[in-house]
Image (cartoon, rainbow, N blue to C red; front, side, top):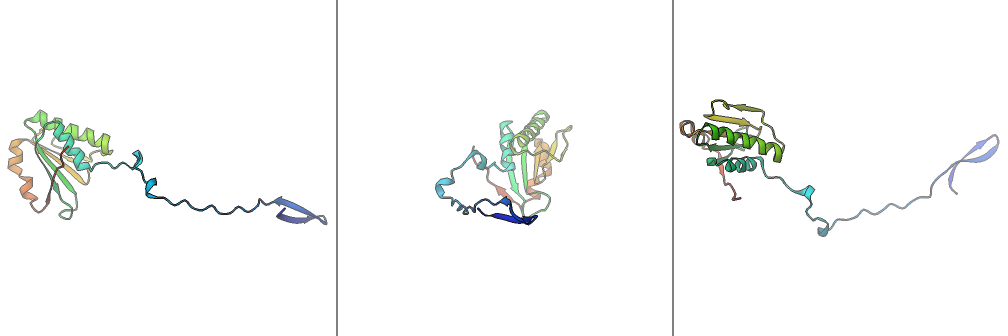
Length: 157
């Protein structure tokens, strides 16, 4: 039996026995059959799409998504839409905030213009959500100002 030995008062004693050597286990190689999708590998939709679906659920009009990647450094996407009146504009931004919180775990860093509800801007870092009244949307024309950006096609539900 292997182990460490020591001499104690002239007698050879085994200090502690060593376990027998175990062979290294071979690593298991994954095959394509092992790559079944699981709930843990489910991919979440992009935040702009969550915002679009939330706005659609509150009957937002003229939904546009602008891809600002490479155009500006402060945001990657603009979601722009219109509400018919002040109550609908507020309802749209409330639903967007609720869905982004529940589905993407995102909270806005800032919300501007909620009380007046002519143009509400919600800042989610890389995503900016703009909800306009019809009059303000025409006046400010964000699509015209950011014409160098790419228009993102919104996939059907």
